[in-house]
Length: 394
Image (cartoon, rainbow, N blue to C red; front, side, top):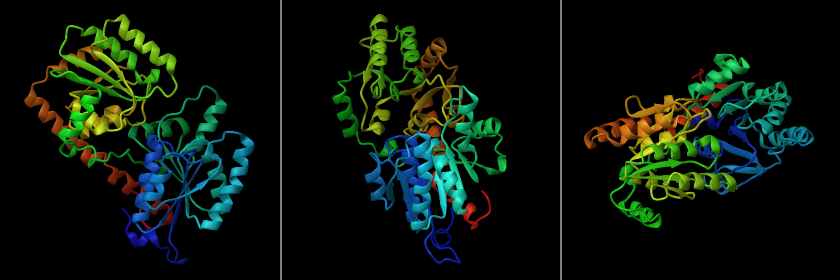
């Protein structure tokens, strides 16, 4: 990490360094949370953290950590609005003395790069996942995220994708994995009262091994695959599966899952739960956490959080999850393969208590070594330092 002195003051101008992060909105997603975490680190290092977006739920969190927010219509994909956003960003950067523009999403990235080039300041990006590209035009649109002076990839998988798809020189790519708050996701810090309250709210029966699958209800997350796998281990009457997540308006998909549960006579063994506000307690309730995405994930936050909570994980062998699972502590299965998932569930449910405890400790140690929030923000500050000429490339 750069020192507070190098980040907070430039030798010539003798003014605080100002970093501007741009993204469409400040919702509750991983990119948005990462933006706030990095802003907090920027402020702690003695610099200014500006964020511009259309606003959202995390504005309060941003201001609480000392960041500043400017509202601009950056979620728009209208070419005219994007063009006008260039002038808006140029004006903002000149007024606030911005030293680096850091783009976290495609539409605002187009405006951000044009503004940075006009101003002669560094432009960088963070690529959070592969982008769908069914046409040459869409591939060109996506390419803006691979054209920074530095390109942060949140996993080795994403780094390979950027290099192979957009031919970004590898010396411009920096791998900065997503970070987990290992203090929040720490089994020793989650009280029995929190777990008991959640179990009571969910009306969970005693004496069941719990399989937990967190994530919004969308087909590619693989909830249907898990339900089919549960049907294949219907002889395991000691198991309860909880699928936890909002449908975000996908009512038809929720109804499809409910029908699948009913058709397979799993009403007493598989439950669809709404969004959980205390995920640390939810992980502690669980014996096994499943990540069944059928499309490649750029990282796999659920995997890292579950391991931080010393829980065994089963994940699909696609995208970044193989990087995130601690060696020898989890299971990888082909995407969309319900029989393989059922076999992995059987094996995981049969692990002895002593072996499970050993695997769980190894899993948490792996996360604490590789995927902490502190490591993520320090590495990101290191990339800022490179661009400002304060440090050698990391």
